[in-house]
Amino acid sequence: MDTEMIPLDWFRILLGEAPLLFYAEVALRIVMLFAMLLLVLRLLGKREHDSLSPMQQMLMIALGSAAGDVMLYPQIPIAHALLVLIGMSVLTILLEKTAAAFRPVRDYVESRPRVLVRDGQVDFDALRRERTTERELAATLRSKGAVALAQVDLAVLEVTGAISVVLNDRKPRDRDLLEYLLDNSKCSPLQEQRRAR
Image 1 (tube, rainbow, N blue to C red):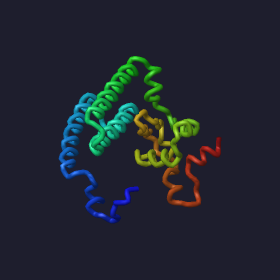
Image 2: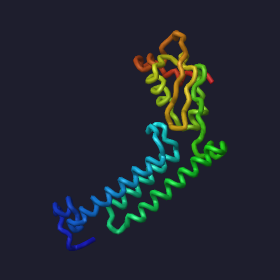
Image 3: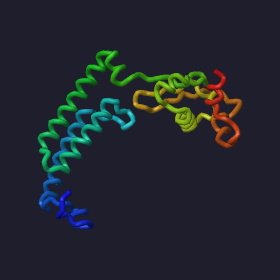
Image 4: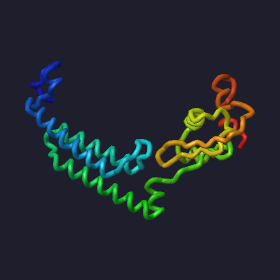
């Protein structure tokens, strides 16, 4: 630890020890990396946040780390960040093209959609394999308008991590997805199904 450091030095705490001109360099780095990130996003195409593939999500994390480090640390040159940005983008695009052409590669990289509920019956093995909790599933079913498990024809965990729900038109006899929330003495319908197995 530097013995010359003065505790509670507000100038050092707020502005650091770098020369003030370094802030102009940080601003220049931000502009340059922002332009590069815009180019990378254009290369990836238009997608909703929810529909990013796992590879694209991984790319976003890598890009954020590379861009953040080079913007803040003067010892990291912009060329290093640009190499990371371009390299990760090219690898992601190549892997996505390979995955589109070869199903085994696609299944490994992006996984496959998994059925969690079929005809009102929960697949607890699928829930466990996908590390999805019963509470998350029940909350998603309710958010999609289901008041009973019997209303759910199909619930699918998509490769994006979202759960798609297909409801039937039948009027349910009970409202088991809601009643256990309102009556603390009842257990959830998913717990009842698991016990009945």
